[in-house]
Image (cartoon, rainbow, N blue to C red; front, side, top):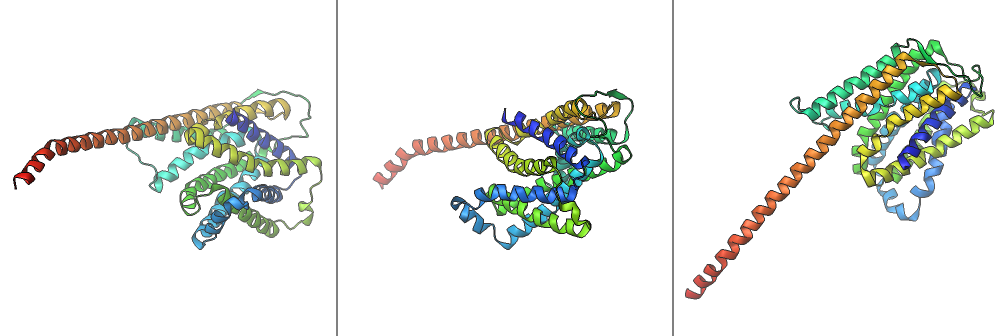
Length: 353
């Protein structure tokens, strides 16, 4: 129930933010405000007395360097590319392209030696096939539109939430870059977690660094000072919702992973695409195309194939670990039995001597 609720949050975030961006809010300014609000939301937890030892440990040069690089690429670059892509494409395509993240992470993990590939194994074949399907589906969504599937008009006008059709391909490019940046963030969590095991503290530092980095980037790129002014309740509420949402989603995902593992958590991602597509087509009049349907189905199918391969791999590792444990127990029992049988003879020999 927690993960289903989180997917609704992601769907609402994509739709809500796109509405604010189409009303004139600057994407780069939005990222700055979002990261600043997220930092304020995480501060009470990270700066509490209970976490002061972890906070002092995280101030080392290695930890700060790792978190700075991770926040620069995995948060600052990722969020700017993501929301620019959201602005130029559509909410449905944005959530569908986000399903590329597990596949891209798999490719990067293989390159860095964190994932093993055996072409003779069905598990590895499933992971490779699923990755190809995910990438192919995302390319299909970007390049192939086809006929419209449905076009509903309900509540709001087309002009209010119009699409930037000419920039569709550019938006998909930003979303692809965002997926790569986010995959890099996941890979970097291995050394970051090793140097700073407290995830609340590391998240606080990365949010703070990302807020500073985003502010510097926006000040350099955005020359219009009026862009920093929020002009409507929609813009204020979207920034607040997006900022607090980072903290909320962090706690929900951390709790779910501790209870059921990361695979269980990742399996709910495609649900966000379905929710977003239905809500966007019904309320925001975003057009659904045949290419979007085919590509979306390919992305979701590929994702589940990759997850199946990972699940079988985990089962195999557990079985091997259990087999080694059983063998060690048998060897230990055999040794204890031999010692028990030999001990009377040893004692008798000592007495005779």
